[in-house]
Length: 160
Length: 114
Image (cartoon, rainbow over all chains, first blue to last red; front, top):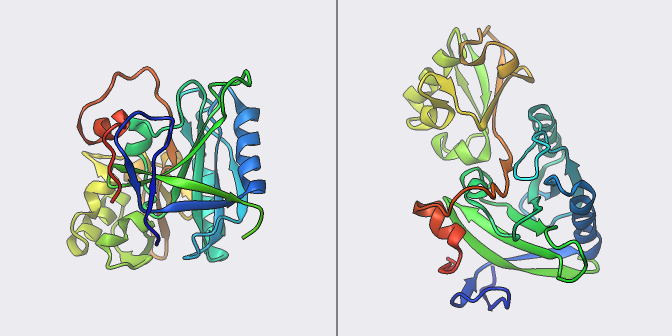
């Protein structure tokens, strides 16, 4: 894993030292953004699966937000079981777990942190708060391990 | 009475990395007590007091036990139990700036990667 120093302009805090990176295709990026926009003002959620151990997001899977809420998301419990069975059968894992914030910035909330149970996943947050086209649509990625949040660089590529 | 229990990644630290373990019990509550005897610490991650934790899903033969009898659901020999933490979160915008570990991270200005 490559160490990357990165100083995002969106924050005034001290230098963030990033030790991981999310590499994702433009097509997958666009699918996540489209899902978030479609479900606005409710939060949208889903995963991008990839071969186990590859760290390569490949298969976009939009999930139903069973909470149907502008401030909360939860995968339906039956869908969750089907999803994990399928990933297991295909020898895949959830490389990316994404959801949207629809009135706040794309940064993990306390709720996001307490329920983050996949230490190997990239937690992607998008924000649809700015929908008037005046600001950049926020798309950010984080590791959440044992309650500690680490932002990582997002590299968008045409193909892997 | 053997019950196969599928363990999610996050709890495999309690099972030496095993994806599935065997246990026994007449109910889910007994099963988790039995697992605790060999995998110390696992019970508290699944059970809170005398209830299942809100954000841990437990399935008996592919059915969410919340639609059965919860932690008192009866088990039979050969049953399969799957444990999966909920995938959940959200902006929870109305909450005040929290304190503690989550609070520091949510504050966001003092993050150092590791």
